[in-house]
Image (cartoon, rainbow, N blue to C red; front, top):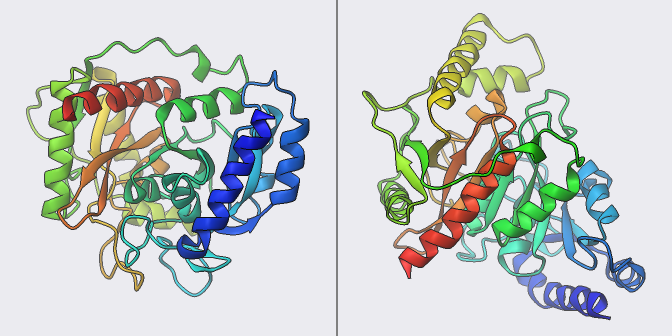
Length: 363
């Protein structure tokens, strides 16, 4: 009965909050309650309600694995509607998806409704996919945890291979449960070595090319300082700030599906070389998730919210967004943690240490 009650509570919260937040496209109340009544209580995620990204999310590999582990899908969440090339917004059954902290701002995207559903406590976790930052950006702007897995670790929903499966969750522990259940037991990620803080890390506020909102930069620097104070990370000395080449043209070339130009190929190869060198000597790269705060529903203007995320869709590294704090006008900011390819489980261990120890320092 506890499983049914948990799902019923999630459905009641969706019914109460979604007309305003517009996080869901569809809600499967009857099916979810029936599944909760019959779920095997011995399964690891028995009765845990979750949401899926977009109208086809229920057919994703990750959703199937979560259901096999006993989790209960309660609905599909909003993604960007037609008519715009920018993807940091969503369209739910009741209207445009709004940021739970600032209704006049976007929640980010394209996993827009998934982030809002988690942030508002409608569900503890939701599936997502990330081709340029589509998990990390809404996680950052809605103040929740988000993970983009290593490219190729799970089946990609994108023919170019840029998009990786991901998860949005209210805690790192829930994301760890997701990762355990979607991976095969003998997978390489499950073999990761334990992480013992302080973890050697490099902080790059702009990756050498992004233009940061000064208030976002202030929040991010304070979050990094808390991680140092809490003993989660140890910043490595650098002779010069770590930087990448701006990956914009390379990402667009790959996304276009055609052969990348010589320049785009050179940028991608050079960034891979720099990242390989970085992770040969340190365990973690830290950046802001976005250079900007959540923008209005009219769009981001000339700013690229993806400026600091899409490099890692090209390189394939796992990357997570953890809440960093708020700008003075009440907008959430995310801190991006990037680890070596295949080190997803270790990345989650670091994120969990950040979640618990840094919160204690913040008081």
